[in-house]
Amino acid sequence: MTVPSPEPVAEVAPLQILSPKRNKRLQTGWEGFFPYYAGYPELFARELLQSANLPRHAVVLDPWNGSGTTTYTASTLGLSSIGIDLNPVMIVVARARLLPPSEADHLRPLAATILSHARAQPPTLAPDDPLLGWFDLATASFIRGIEQNIRRSLVGSMTKSPDGVHLDRISGTAATLYVALFAACRRLVAPFKSSNPTWLRVPKAAEARITASPAAVARLFGGNVRGMADALGAKRDADQLVDDLPRLGDCRINLSNTTTMELAPASVDFVLTSPPYCTRIDYTAATRIELAVLGPLLSSSARALGRQMIGSTLAPQAPIDVDEAWGATCLQFLGALQAHPSKASRGYYYRTHLDYFDKMSRSMAHLSQALKPGGRAVLVVQDSYYKDIHNDLPKMIEEIGVHHGLELTQTSAFHLKSMSDINPGRRSYTRPSGATESVLCFSK
Ligand SMILES: C[S@@+](CC[C@H](N)C(=O)[O-])C[C@H]1O[C@@H](n2cnc3c(N)ncnc32)[C@H](O)[C@@H]1O
Image (cartoon, rainbow, N blue to C red):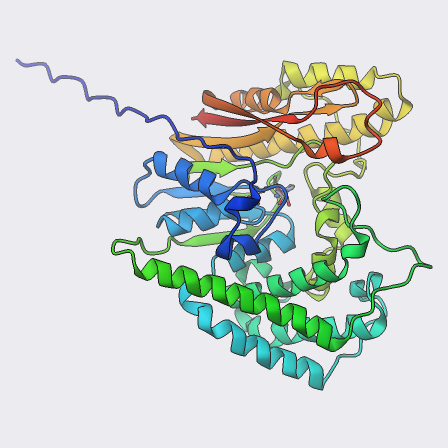
């Protein structure tokens, strides 16, 4: 009897890892309209996903999808993808990015109609409209008029339900016009930008609000739509020159919280993501003006949303116990933080860090569960310093991943100038400048 030779074990090719550092030079064309300070470049995602050699039916997941670099790239490679984010603004941005190039010519006429309706009938503003936080009454009314017309003409009935509007179902066209309005408002509130690039200040009660004429707002909005239409048109023209371009992959963008998300077990082939930083970045404060634009579509307040974010700057309401699952490096870090002589360290900062690791560990458990056996997960993670204590987040995420059944198979590290270098007030501590961004590749 002949003994069958054992099945050859498929070699898992190493992944191609470029620098995940965000680079202005790489943000051109259609890409350039979706800047997000916490994103990695499309080229990084593209090389990586291509090198993963995924089968056609593979599902790619980004549980912290932000501006949607992963879902956009997966879609252009013909792969199915799921993008999750808790911030409604990022849901709209990620959906806009998926607008097919064939829609390029529809954007300008739509924007012209929306602007003419907004000019003809500015709405009566609710006294608590969040836009009034930055703009005077007339300016806020005109901006709301544009928003209301995008909503009325493009946010279809499919999107509405008794509990409000499902932002994760709005059309790519509506999302694109919202992004053009976001960018116009962001330009207008530039005087309230602070030295921290992620932070937009809310003016004090006595401070003057911004005044802009309807013509000035319309010019900004219209200019953005024109730029987006041109960039998308250029992409369509370039795509037409390629013979074997894959059909765009299906993509679901879900407004959901990774600490509680429900994904079918073993349903995902590949995860590519960058988890929220542990450097006191308030992801909702970074998008305050965009949340104000979306005000009428939101089912929870910006503050309630901020509380749920991983990396929230709000101290958790209920006590959180340290969990062994967070690993030795994390527990050591928390011990050093708690023992730090500053009072706020053992109080507020200790509690916000407990909140971060509790949410992160719960999210990693869900992520691992969703991954198929043999599936891979790539996480881009940055280290940082809390005062003079090194927060080796890549090591901690590695240990949390291992605890939840993942195995680290490949890593690359890149040095970068970090956000905290530009944050004044932290200079009294000696520590190396910059940060290390690690690309952690896990297998299940
Ligand atoms: C580092 S950013 C991701 C950037 C993304 N890779 C890109 O290219 O734009 C992390 C994202 O996690 C989201 N986030 C924070 N807490 C979350 C939670 N509990 N559930 C889902 N998303 C969350 C934030 O809104 C933010 O967009």
